[in-house]
Image (cartoon, rainbow, N blue to C red; front, side, top):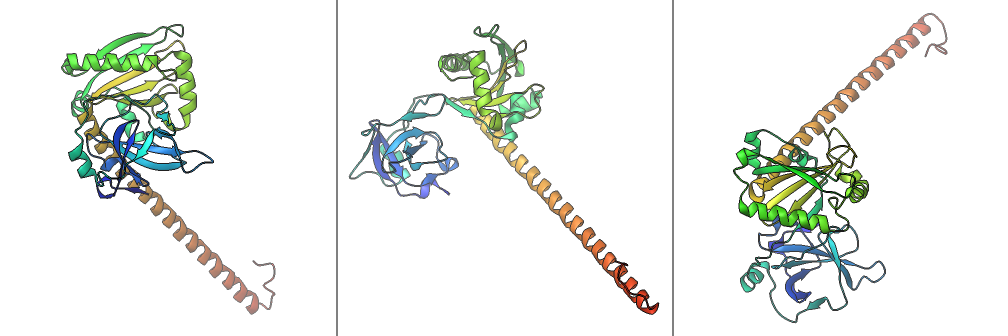
Length: 312
């Protein structure tokens, strides 16, 4: 169960010498305000009393949640190890998120976050769409590329919306992001073999429906932009497409797409329920007809002085 970040009582801590709030509860990311960053702590398999890792999200060995004003730059795999003195509890300090925000100013630090995406509602955003849809989602353009013989890196820029959003700020952001992805050891953009391993690892959760060739989708976020990375580890073809969006309109479009997908799932479930109900009614009707026919055979057999055995 996840809790609203605004309604939880916290304990002030320091983590890697940065002020933070700690709670043993899981915090719903959607309730965390802008300028506050949520991370989860993992305990060891045997020692539940000490946190061992700080991660973006955890499925098992959950120790607690920390909220910070200063974000951490996590590697591609989304976690960093903790030492025994990395987390320190304070005797006093902020108990609510509001107090914490008032005490500590927002950070200007701009980190790069890498996500494996298990969200079919976003699959359309890995492809070119109409100019109207581009405008709504804040699409700047897309980068198409391949690794040549395996280690090279060739790209072509395709502008969207007449290249109107391709500003110096965006150019600096995409250069920084691509360079970071190229440097990370486990990044799908490091080289062909790394992409192939990454796609094999995340194939079950990141496969993109509608792609002509087997492809996996990843999402990269900075403070102002979102990069939707479509990876196709097939030699002799283009191996990646990166669709670039302004973050605010993208997240608005993302919520609308999720809402639409939710309605579609609800309608589909309703149709399945109605089909099941109809099938049950038809089956019940057939059972009633068979039962009525059997009873008529019994009655006829009695009238003729015959045994009903063998008639059913």
